[in-house]
Length: 289
Image (cartoon, rainbow, N blue to C red):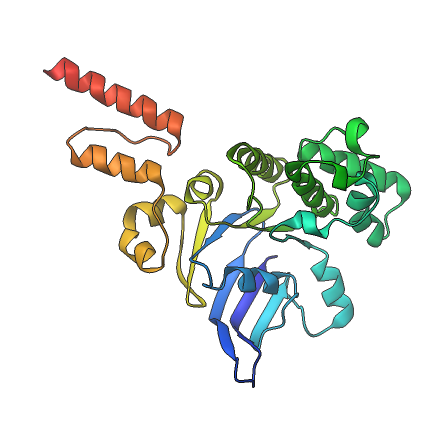
């Protein structure tokens, strides 16, 4: 049970003077329950890659399978398999089109043939996940709400279909820091609550360090690194730099402090844990003097 890419190559505008190879020989498997981050510089192939996961793009060569079903062979089986994958594009609020928040979120569940009773249950549940009060906004026009709220509505519309694999392509793009923190917090809570796979494309290394259990680094249409975030950010910094990827500030800070001689022990890579570890190290240093 997984999303599997087998030697996938994709070429834009193939056979024209504008032909461009976007993916080259990708072999990759996304397993159930993983939280996968996909990073890389602009133009590295991240968005093209994830659009193969649900069959939006067809490989120029190679195969894409969901739970062993080829997405571009058996039409009926492939149609059912694609329903297991939900996709939230960049600036998803541009996808909103219904007159009310309820109708927009209900569109996906209604499209897969659920009863009205089940649709309402799913809409309420999805709105709760993204931090929207049902009674306050369900019957309002989504276009009367703030940009951050519109973003949540669009995400809720995908969540309401209850996909086994949720893909988010830069879901925090254009949001202020508070809006970004809220979106990522809700995505993390959703992953914990459902146990479903989450595939997150982002440029923000601080956030991906806190969220992902696995990190895929793209460069020039290829997967150049694939490991845990901690492993990659600590042990493969030269390769990350070559791929146009920055190391999170919190890791850079720890390295500088350790290089300066401060004996900081192992700690979780978040601001609170690092601050506590630094204080403990300073306390030990003071006692040793």
